[in-house]
Amino acid sequence: MSQPDRPQPATQPAQQQQAATQPPTLDSTQILGGRTQVAINHGGELYSLRVTRNGKLILTK
Image (cartoon, rainbow, N blue to C red; front, top):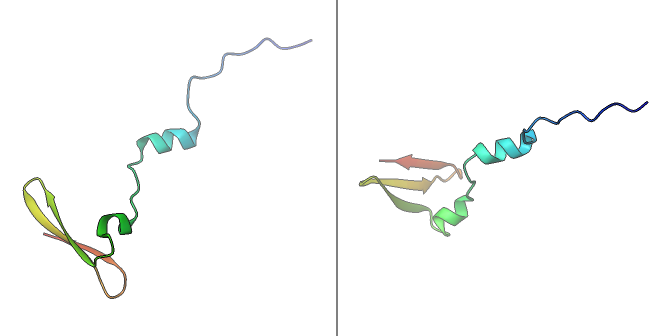
């Protein structure tokens, strides 16, 4: 005997759900464009994003 088809839950796989809620990922080279420092205007405030000698990113106001 075959079992009757059961309705499947209307949920997305976990990876699709996670991708839908995650912000997009940008590579730092897209933001910096080969420079070691850029200015970012956010809400009328000016921020500085720079790369340290150790390759870390620092965002300051």
